[in-house]
Image (cartoon, rainbow, N blue to C red):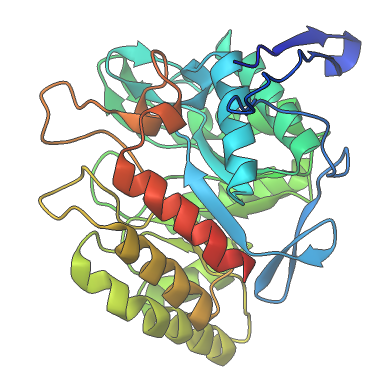
Length: 354
């Protein structure tokens, strides 16, 4: 077995000195180190937009992502190992929550009032720094709501403090974007009005005009709401969450084309990013590898700019294990994915490389 040790030494101003101690491979060649090695990516990764596409360092690039919600609770070793596997499988984008509290373990980088919360606040910067070096885009998501720790960002002031704190922390980096409010249209504790989103977006742009800002929808977006996203809030791209049933796959291409057609009519076209499609473990329908492949194919065929391989807890189990990206304290993400998910990731990588 290959035994590689990776030491990270934090220097002043948040820079990192990477020391890689690489041992010899065994003679039989069966061992394979999956941890991060020297990268061919630039040391600085710059996410941008050109028309309805994303760009990375100026090159139009499809964002192929994976849910990595509870990353701030995972060990650095787990994260480095997962990022290496992601790169090996063509994944260039992760979705991380800045205020995540699951399974009685709060790994939020900001508290319910929007103030920095250590050690996870610093951990967020570390993660974005590592991803910047490796050419990986980071979706930093905020949410309103309520859990066993109490209310989260219930007021506009607390929500604004969270936005300001995170942007101040990450302002040297351009490999991330901000989702102001997860599923902001769902009529429960998550709800954030368009007027509030507008104010939060203005705050973000005043602090960093280059930062890309969005707000995700818990459902397909109707024409009237799309106009609000584009003209009132002025998001840089849209993030509709698709229905989580087998019938959604056949409609993904048409729905994407519909969004783009509506945008043309409204005079402002932006990327369509499928940040949270269906997943395994959510309900009775357990998608197969071919289902994931078809949905990704249909998203691209319709002109979408990004698609995320969503994953989470196993709802039919009392402890919800495997919890996948929802809880990575005991096992890293790739060690929790089931055979179907690993098959899908392998197949989609091959499909995207064609």
